[in-house]
Length: 415
Ligand code: GLU
Image (cartoon, rainbow, N blue to C red; front, side, top):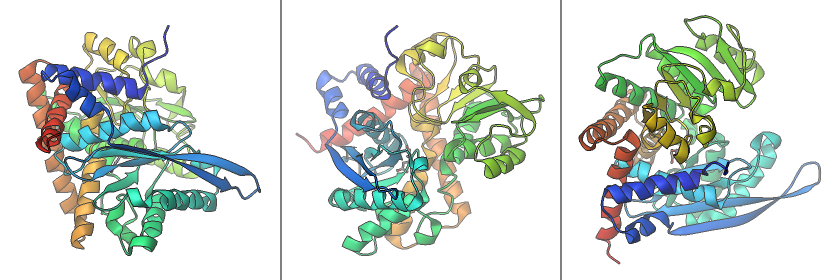
């Protein structure tokens, strides 16, 4: 069997089919596919044990016709230029779908942060900024956390950048509240998953209470999504992280507070009370009302798509369902709530953070949360309406709305 489609290949195929649905010619697809700028830097690090390790840093700036480039920095051995390209274009579309005044970008460093000491990681991040500072900025490109990076990393970037340009909190989002971050940013992506899934259930005339959910990934997104969905009455049938998973013993599901306490103590959900161990690949194939892949891309491929027993999928990660799997799942009638909608809560609150920084304001949590809800409900409503009117999948509808907005902005500037 050929290898499963990569995140970039899957994303390109989704974009191409959106361009075809919209009747755009091949040159528009090409225009949207190719990024404005791609940067790669060498990051040599002298480790504390004396060894020298050479890391690579990347930033792909997809398009900025709708606003400054915006997107996360991923710290993971798998990040490279090709993956950054796919993820950067995904960010352009996500921002367009939410009607945020941003373009898209993505990048990162090909390191495993868990294998580095904090001082080493800090040095690596500061070196990255030293090489990249001319290409980022509050009106140019605004990084944020992604897989493997967090508020602490954003604070180092903010500090290193501010050494050259003066106090510049708006150069990054997702930074600590203490250094100008927004209240509600930390949980925003997971909160957004709850809001979008709730909207979808409402639109189908059903409620989430008592329905079962399986979540793959227990990092920032997965853990906050678990909280948001449990708060809406969903039963947590199984949860997992990189080390493995836990499957609830009883029908009422896992007790999230007990899992969180266990996770704080051990760093993993494996062995959490009230459940038994389960492998990550088995977890994806459990029968449940909703499956939430919230880890890396490519969790569901043609290989396992035929065995998925979930009644619906909400993509909390970026690109968790490959394009060939998407086709299988569509044929099997399993609806997929697409990543550019489901996980857009993060960049939406990033936008609020940037707005607050530019105006030297600090909004209360309630204000952030009600604005987040309004933005996501509007975008979700547009996707659901368009999928109904056009008789297409939710992903096709979301991609078409976003692609049209992006193309309108790009062509307005002329060529
Ligand atoms: N990394 C997140 C994403 O993929 C957030 C990006 C941001 O806030 O700029 O959407």
